[in-house]
Structures are given as structure tokens and as C-alpha cells.
Length: 175
Image 1 (cartoon, rainbow, N blue to C red):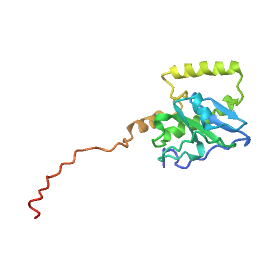
Image 2 (cartoon, rainbow, N blue to C red; image 1 turned 120 degrees about the vertical axis):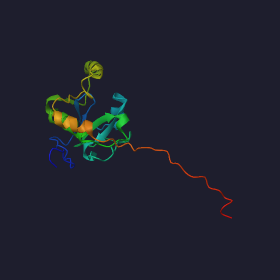
Image 3 (cartoon, rainbow, N blue to C red; image 1 turned 45 degrees about the vertical axis):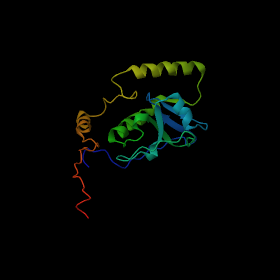
Image 4 (cartoon, rainbow, N blue to C red; image 1 turned 90 degrees about the horizontal axis):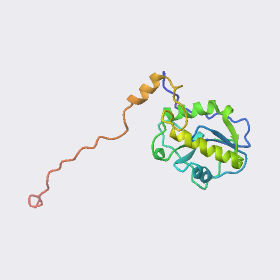
């Protein structure tokens, strides 16, 4: 409640259900009008996995697509770093996803790639990976400072591990 982002996420509806859209790690939104497997996208970005936006729920684990699964038309997919594959979806993940989706109509590209466009895309990914102030090519400046502070103060999900001291058991006393 209050300033907290809603736990019920509603994926934006696509105007053309005859295509699948993918938000790439660079922040680019690519539209595919033909059948594409998740493995093809993971080959383009080796350290990332693909997630259907309908499966994103705050405080639940990511459910990555298997490499042999086809992207369904009419759905929106997001790519996240592979190190996050076993972690929990946070409000920051959804906020970054929504920022990318809201500016998507300006940056949608077709699924067809010419050789010149492929070279330009490779150069763009190199420059995006070298940027230190962007996370996955998306700028977090639009997120309010108070919200960023709340995310930084959140308690960690790591358990406190302490040594368990046990007394030795003597079998002589039992008989």
C-alpha cells in the first residue's frame, strides 16, 4: 500500500497479436513476426535468459523459458541477467520493465535483420555494456530517489548462519 508498487502486475496489451515482442538487455524492443525459439535470443545475449512478462510476480521466483520453447505471439518477453535466474522478482525489476515498455513505441524494431543492421546492433551492444551509469541499458533516473533509498535499505534474504554446538552422546550411560 502507499508508495509500494502493486504486487498484481498487468502486462501491457499489444496492438498486433501477430507478433512477439522482446525487451533486450540493451533496452531495445524487438518485434518478431515469425516463430522464434528462446535459444536464438539467448545466443544473441549469452549471459541473459528470457522470461514471459505474464509470469513476473513480485516476491516470486523468475520462471525462465526453456531454450527449446517458442515465443508465443501476442506476448511480451524480457531478458534478465543469468545470475538472477534463481532469485526473486523485485519491485525494481518490474519498475525497470515498465519504464522500458512505456518508451517501447519509439524503439520497436522488426525481427528481420540486414547485415548492416546486425553490425550496428553489435556496436550498440558494445557501447551499452561499457556504460557504467546504466543497468542493462536502462536508465534508473526516472525512479524517485525515495524509492531507490527504500530498495537499498531492504533487508537481505540471506539467513544468519551460526554454528550449532552439541553435547557429546555417551552410550555407556544409556545401558
